[in-house]
Image (tube, rainbow, N blue to C red; front, top):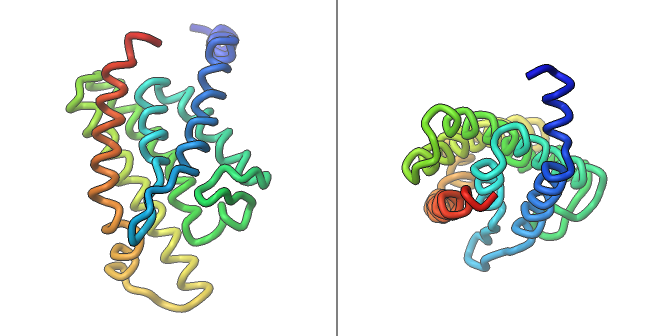
Length: 184
């Protein structure tokens, strides 16, 4: 497919609608907070569902639009927040990591298909990359702003409390992708 044909196909009315819909879904799921000791959002569920249903390119555009809206100050991030301060703050690496998650998860899904197991594992590998990028970002900013912090401390703050809820969200996203794939 030529570059112009690919561009036309990617920016068809149907694809623009899907990309926009999933940008909005990610924002809405960012606002849904499950109150526990550490509140959880449904953001990773929406990002995984977006990747599973839209594929790599459209998911990257959808997540990119979501991030650009947040960077512009639209309150699309968790806690109805937005702005460059959030995006470049200590947890901003996890938001940017969603783009990396789309790349790796999308590549795995393209290679191994859309069985429940391959979807779940693709989402897990993608989220692991997102965790790694976000934790590295957190460590660098924490070091610059506050002082040194150990990797184990950062993981205990930023990753470990979210492992079980994220596993549940990724399972639900894999199941929903499997059921909805043929309807798109």
